[in-house]
Image (cartoon, rainbow, N blue to C red; front, side):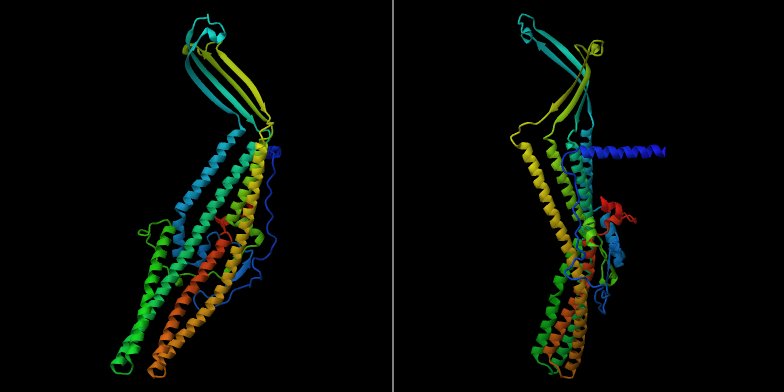
Length: 498
């Protein structure tokens, strides 16, 4: 039995190859992968800088390492994972992409019918009136009668030049395009959720820092007012401290507004109404910075990025359409047959002697169409050239995307270290200035400057921390997101070869 199945599979493969060989037009050949070995102008360091703050760990770049299909779990946040699970269970964007994929699959199923004969059954009844003039003899009296017909009709358009098979090839490419569009929507959605979650955590940290600074300045104002009551300071010093406090308070509403809008965006990203989402309050302290970052080889990137794969399917589709246009220049053979009965009354419809049948063949060879067929082929070739240029542009954009993210990660670490040092220096400067103010060795102007610098340093530190998390998520997105490993199995060989 197994030998029979193996023999049958072998025959199927041979038949498929023969059919493909009979199809006119160029056979598709995938573009060569880029030959470069690095993404950036200069080689990447093995790891990033470190900083003595949360999110300041060194990140090591591992060339050729696998990319987790659920890369967001590397941030160690159950809240982020729940947000992802909620979004992936039925987001409208994914549902629309899935419906488009099903539509493309059914279009291909419908087109398969052109490879087989079509069989139709018909039953008709009509009332006719004929005169002798119909037969060239007006003397024959007029006759009115009913005519009933039942027949089975068979027609078959033989795909001599392979145009129908090329069209099937184009439709199969359309299915692959929608499949990669679905993967691109999946990747974009998860990356946007992660980035928005980090933005919320950063805004929450900035609001917390601003409130702490506000409370500290409020206490300082109380002290200044007491000193003013004792005549130790001028009214100008009191007004300056009040202005500083008011400025800090004015910084809160824009941050709170941005936080509320970010939470609304996050609710929509997971497919919920903002008023019903019940989102958790995310904090930077709840995230862990992934320390081992995969960096795919440039030759692998073109097989991993959904946008590149989708652009390649368009290339394959337009290549097949060249064969479709070329097949119109070749002979077209149509076979037809019909068998049925005809009678003047329903009761005698199937009586002996009422049978009718016909069989025929038609061969059509285009000869002169005023250049129409050649123009269609030239248009198909031009469409392929356009698709190839767009494919090249997509590849260039993808490599720039990866290079930008790698550089961002490198300089994010440098920026965080510098920001951590600035925050520590600003905090120390503020403490020293406050102590000097008590002994009268510093002015209130120095205090205000120290307070302003410390506030800016705290905000900058929160932003720098969030940038490392966001750009780490951007790296996973830029490398394709590991969709070929989804399901817990290494499906890379099969997925990347298609």
